[in-house]
Image (cartoon, rainbow, N blue to C red; front, top):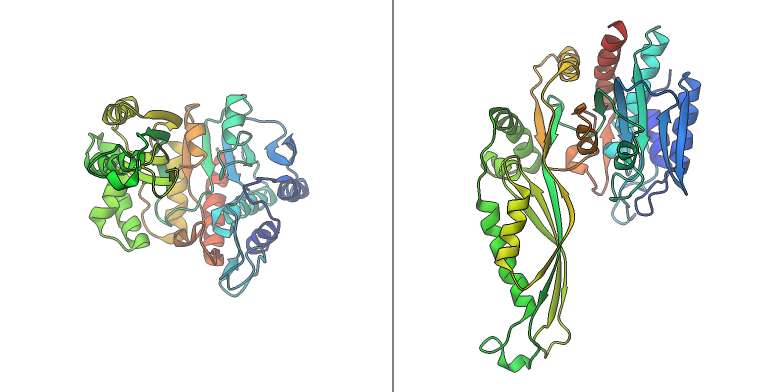
Length: 391
């Protein structure tokens, strides 16, 4: 049987940065492994962007992960980011936590139950374009009807005792502010600066962040469950963690404006990423923004509502697996970040994120995954797959 740390290491060594998002080599490796353990697969290709799916899809339980990773500059890394180095406690390298470690744990768990004579009714999907808002990953597969699972387990890194059943929504805006050009010596007494308009709008974003939204009891429960782990992870107070999960978060990711230092800015452009909590009405939020800046152009680049899977059979099995491995009670959680779960929930599937990884090292220098977590998550997956197979 393949050692899960070794498989994770082999996957890390195969570069699949997004951009450009080429996953042909890592998908080839995974297909070879699947063939070795007796799983028939198919590869969907768009240039060098590849997705690996089960050949004969049953649409009962989907095991899922993305194999593209964010780029890594080698500066300041203790070991080269694509070394896949294994030491006594961790596997090092870009993608080890997010989320090639989870993909390795899923496949090694599947190998184990198959070796035990159990054939669970599961499909696999290892996909591209999760990290880069591309057009050939999970969203494409769902829209084209390749996948319509009843349940889905995604091996995204999560807290050890908290399977994630929901995630905040997304609104991404490109805003163009227009001012009146003039001589810089007149400002601020005279003049209408597009840059100052953008600054005023960002102050308004603080007011949006301060707003609270009504939530149903399940959402309130899972937010409360998640605040402890999030506050510990980020070294912030529980109140601050609750704000991240329950309020509109905003980040001015890119801003550019002005023509010359001695000219009042005529144009300023802002790209804004907002994460949307449960209870927030997105059309109303966009109306509020447009009303605050009526003379500016607001282009909606992306709009996705927050999602939540009501706990069902898969959740119960994952929690039972966690409790059998760790000896502690599992509690449902949510996340402020986005994953492929949102696309699958649109089909009505019950989707659970649960996987190994050091959450403090997501997209970070010296990303690594503890080997202990890889093995523990593999054991949780074995419990889930054995139960599905027995049923």
